[in-house]
Image (cartoon, rainbow, N blue to C red; front, side, top):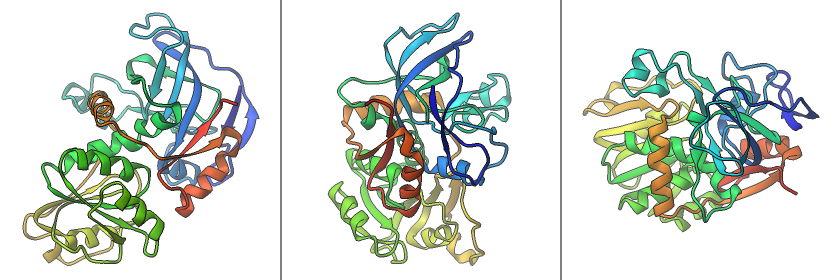
Length: 329
């Protein structure tokens, strides 16, 4: 099969033929039709995450159809459309798994990071961690749901019942979360890179009541802030924007160092917390909610061979909404 392979961190992905994967017991072989390009993929490619498989095929927002079933697979049939997310496997026995917090499993495996992912014509997955996908949406539209949507949804849950939400960084995840928040009757304030008027207009088109640069103070005290931009300096900025009792949620897997800040920014029972990975329960809840809204994912599609271009555009902030790789056509 054709795949985009990362041979060494910091290098470009190589477009080459590799051996076709074969489904083992409990696995599904999926013919990939679309795979979202996530900021986590950038962290993997740039070598910012430890213990990545090498070489590795990145990609963990995978939409495809079941091409083969391994032994003992239940719940899926040949030709069915499925989604493969970031969480690829957990032990099921540690204290986190038995407590319903499988996202924190120390032995967890992750798609496109510690196991091969979806920047390829085929991908393997443990069937227990795949999601059935709703009808009525294209493959490209669904791909960002598998991480940008799932992690965004979990981050929004961590914000509790906050009515005024600040979203810092308005890319793939934020443009989905904004729609969920508006559906729930929340007020969205969008903070973008300073001077990114296109992203600000995009945020307003999705219902944000205010949009501006991340260097600008919030116009009203926020009840919660969700940080999608991997910029540590935004943590004290967001703490200054939230009201007493407010929560700052760091939604990324990687962030630059958080600078020192005065205790007065945290005082007043403000809280800073992170979001780590996802659970299968998150996925089931989000898929049902996204189908009901229904969500509209704005995507920029690229052929599989142009994955390096897609990553570069994502890194520069040039993508409006989500970047998605396609293998069809």
